[in-house]
Length: 228
Image (tube, helix red, strand yellow):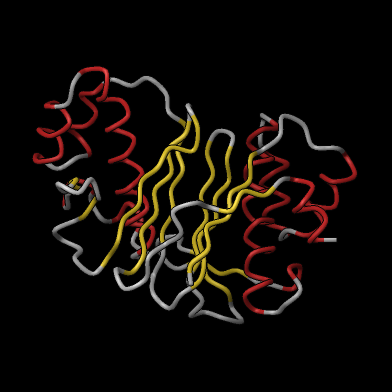
């Protein structure tokens, strides 16, 4: 079974809750949060780790604060105590996302949707993806761009290679059934969905296990209650 946990980042976190979350995360995370100029960036960073700790604590039966994370050469995280437990974390804009569970690599990406210059697709997308994108009606191109971008990001995060794998070396395509697939990665399943008007979510998982079509959305109050 695979779980997708989502948390909407509040505009302001009460001091008591914020300091409790800071005490839970790693010292490295606290130091990183202190360096951010904008508080919203600190919120995203800390809440990403806090949500991961809550979720993985349930999977492992461990206290969330006792979990220790390590990263591979390309930045993909894993647990020292349960290195084979798949999970992945992403945050952008107003949302934090954690995918976990199963026995095969997982990836997740959430992105805030902002106007862009579509010529950027020629730099990062495969020629086939770029052609498909430009063939879309003008009013659909921004949405399609972010679907492609998040799908590709979730895939490279799942395989644990980060941007060391060129984004134009594989293609995300939409089938006649409306589902996304990658010809270069036939053993993976891909899911793309809008979180709201301003954010896109994509996940990558094993083709053998279907991810939930509706992620589990929790609140900052839920998170605080579970972690304390």
